Amino acid sequence: MNSKNFASQSITIAKFGGTSLADFHTMLRCAHIVKKDTSNRLVVVSASAGVTNYLVRLSKKNVSVKEQALIIAEISVIQFNITQHFTSKIKEPLNIEVHNLLNILSHYAHSQFNQYSAKTADKVLSFGEMFSSTIFTKVLQSIGVVCEYFDVQQVMKTNSYFGKAIVDEQLLKIACQQLLLPSLMNTVFVTQGFIGQDKLGNTTTLGRGGSDYSAALLAEALNGNRLAIWTDVVGIFTTDPKITSQAKAIKEISFGEAREMATLGAKILHPATLAPAMRNDISVFVGSSKEPEKGGTHIKHQVDYTPTYRSISHKREQTLVTIRSVTVLQQSTFLAKVFIILAKYELSADLVTTNEFSVALAFDNSENTIPTLLISTVVENLQEFFEVTVEHNLSLIAVIGNDLNNTKGIGQSVFGKINEINIRFISHGASTNNVCLLVKDKDTNQVIESLHDSLFSYMT
Ligand code: ADP
Ligand code: ASP
Ligand code: MG
Image (cartoon, rainbow, N blue to C red; front, side, top):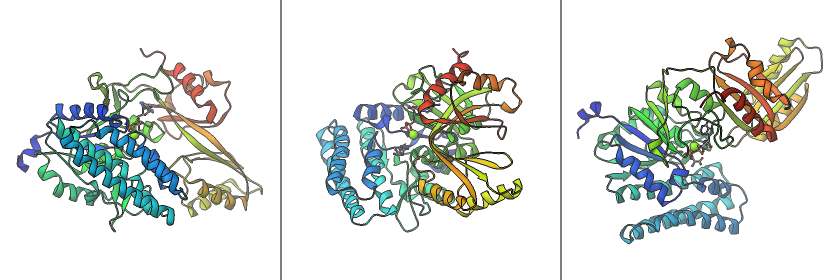
């Protein structure tokens, strides 16, 4: 097929998450999803379930040689449990490839032990996607899909901010047009989510859960028409279905609503995923690789129905810093002084409430976001001027919807059912699309269940 035909061909970028690639049988199901729809041209994979968590442990400082060996053994069990299902013709060379990757991984783990670096940590973290993409290519080939392995580091060029690298979208586009697009109609490519490469050739990672984002960026760079996120639930729900069985699947949702959900903690999509799709009018589908026949959620620019209440998201590990002015500063001077200190450390708060002499700031302290050390440094600096209290182990719960600023009865609907709970913080008014609360971590599930009951029980 020549490049003239691209305009008429629909290009889908299909991303499969960790649970979808957990073992040989789940991989086979994903392979059939790819085969069934010939518009699937690029497949982006996460690491098999659990592998990145092992790699995170392996990438830390001071992991003993014994513990390293145990972790690597766990990872090899996961990988060889998958490869054992191939015929010996495929299995033997594939096992050699997996062994080689394991040896390289152990080399990096050892060097991390001798001298820790964030650079080596990212190298270690990248192995999950290296294993899964190598193996999944073989699964696809074994069912007759013409496909090739593609090293995403050739195109996903990033800065050197290890652990949360920023992608150079222009370089990505140029490299994709040169290296992938010309062959895309002849072969399906299988590549890694989550990882990239800096200018010096070092491997980088985009942050936990980043494969969704990789897939969206690749869809943009290839002028794709559709991004399909295949995961372990049949689409986006009114809240995390793991928290309440009352959660309802949403058939259609706007980009704005879905982005708000992802930003405010819905794990189903990495928060950065939707921006590239929105910019390029790429339709996004979220469905279950286990039950593809059940359909899923379509994310669109325009939807027929925009309900007042759409969903409830949550983020754990939030920290609330309350700052009180001890002198009688004018409020403007007080706030300015607080924010100058935050700016000095490039620390931004997710939520803010204030009155004349105090301000409360909520920070996301979860993995891969703001390091605890940074928050304590800023707190120490603030304490030179103000009275400061710090509360950890809070959860942010966000009710997401439409036109909430102009809706009557929010107080009753949102707070009516949770009056037994100590709400540490409320933010409403700055956005028409959400009401945010901070509660103690231990109350999270109860609050979500009660809110869900109050806001969504009308849905069948
Ligand atoms: P993957 O490995 O496929 O990327 P993730 O575990 O990252 O999968 O995301 C899927 C999970 O997101 C679901 O199993 C579910 O528990 C969680 N989740 C959180 N909020 C929602 C929501 N609103 N709708 C659906 N799933 C959600
Ligand atoms: N494997 C990576 C993680 O577990 C990226 C992803 O799954 O999206 O965070
Ligand atoms: Mg995910």
